[in-house]
Length: 451
Image 1 (cartoon, rainbow, N blue to C red):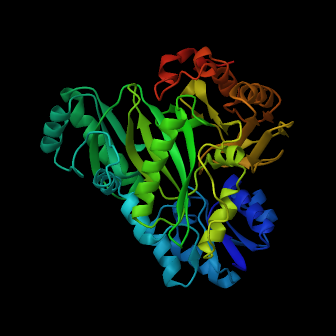
Image 2 (cartoon, rainbow, N blue to C red):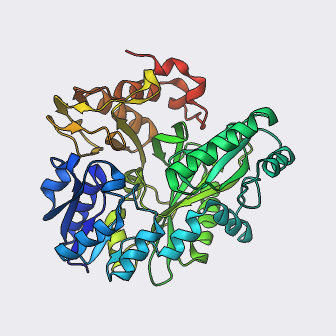
């Protein structure tokens, strides 16, 4: 097992990794930018290193600085968390070249599955259903519009190296396609340093279903069932739950087996997520794979009773998977709401500032993963996530009741947050009935009204 782990991240995920390491008896190193000097992950780590000024490109995204921080503190492993460099094959390779273990898949696996077009081709080879689309990346606008017309509008244009909803544009007809194509390429280049995009048929009302997988270095891969992430805005998830209200055991087994088939083919190691769209006919279509731990991983932890972050660390150290999970043994129902410092009435505009009062919810089956406290200043440089409220109940009805009381008793003052918006969403009749898809919020504009 490792002696010291450096966490190449910030905020709530850095704290989450610190807690897992403490349970395993591993020392930790926090890295922080000058804007994060007062962050809790800095306080609770055993060691800490300032890695640069506030902009992430000058701190959290600087690979040489992170490697140097690990070397000077004696860290023998690095956990990337999610976001930043979590899916960077270059970072994983730099760790390997420096004899530091990267807690995640190999650089080759990240490179293969991080290329969304290559991942689609692999899925097709393994008879995993995919959304109809271009055979690979497309750079020529004339060629692209020809492919789009052949597939039939609407079309979604997606960055090959994409994630987090960046580099994605929808074109409803040929007239709007060229502009959407160029905008997607420009955004992809700015966000990922890679302008390559591919095309997919745009499904009108799909559910977003993802399968949590875990693999070890001894050839074993298993899945821990699904999460339903259909409540989104601009392709970014807001609420996640498990199990999905839309799946029965037969569907769960089928999509789980497809995910394991894809991951096993490449000998996948660590935590990962294979994402699917479920259309209105009940058919699954492979979308992409995320080669990291997800923001919403606590949902799976609550219904399986397994610590996914500790398992990540164990398998990276060469241990075998410590548990066996069978997909028909989910434990109740879990829901997660992401609380952000944003104003939904203004297009989810970020709202940095100082938190003047903070009181987290509690009670049976309520978990809050957060890094904030009264007096904490939310910086303008990073993602605006403040906290994740996760609830567990014996049934979906009980989980919804617990989420309702948790959001009602969650106090964050000094900055505008999405808490009132989330309260309205979970009380919407369609959400209560489980009748949601990725366009749910666009059909309910009343949810965005200011209180």
